[in-house]
Length: 178
Image 1: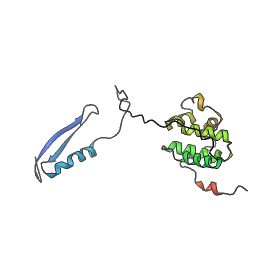
Image 2: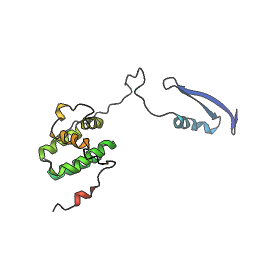
Image 3: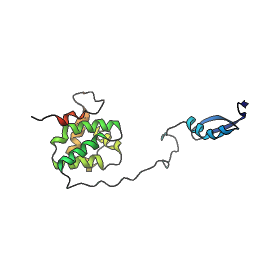
Image 4: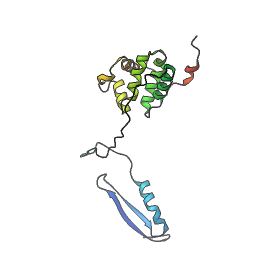
């Protein structure tokens, strides 16, 4: 086969693990520098942990610093930090669930409850765990099974059948409580 800049050569490229094959054609010209970029653009993306013989060795566990209680943090500062951390989770499900929980409960929680909530949202290294515990898809570990988790589980049941598609706006923070 001939290309615009000269003869083209065919390269078989693929993976027996993923079960795909592809042919790349490259010009024997300066365009050959583009081949690695084109190969990356054409490569299937994603990871399926459900494949047979998957050892999980390719999974990367990033160590997080251990959670530390902040005993001298003023309550208004703690509430503001927990509101922020409830809204910025990294997964939409928890952003919505925890921001609604924060709106409903943070202003009336005492210091002990705030510390329990702080530990709940900051100690587990996997946000999916928090979601599964709150929705009761998995049992809650004893260390997190407390009154704050009970409040979160109750909110997650959505007994009023509210449509919860986004986080609440922050206007409620500036409304007068008269």
